[in-house]
Amino acid sequence: MNYTITEKQLDELKKLLERLEETPREKADEENELIQCEGGNPIETLRDILSDALAEPLRELKFWIEDVERQEAPAYSPAAVRHRAGVRGHGDKAVKK
Picture 1 (cartoon, rainbow, N blue to C red):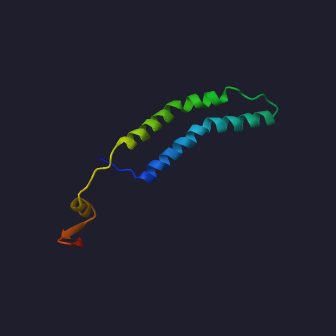
Picture 2: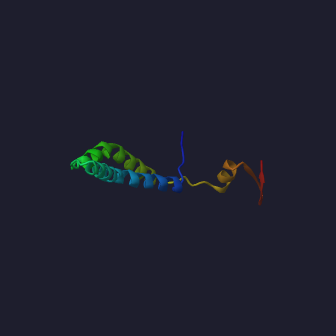
Picture 3: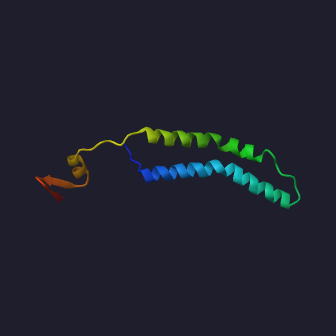
């Protein structure tokens, strides 16, 4: 089966990747702030621990996005576009089936 992805969907995947890449820093900062508020010492390696845990899934998502970007959309003839839309061509007129 072949699937298509719109530019908007691809942009949303890129935004998701960016948010996920920021997650270890944000979560580590939040957790360390809570630890300090409770009188504890921040965990200096927490950001690294979280980054390591997400490294492989983020790498896979990034490669997947790059793979989609390298694919070219197939070029369709006007007749193929009409056929996909359920329209039959009749001379200069197009009639919906």
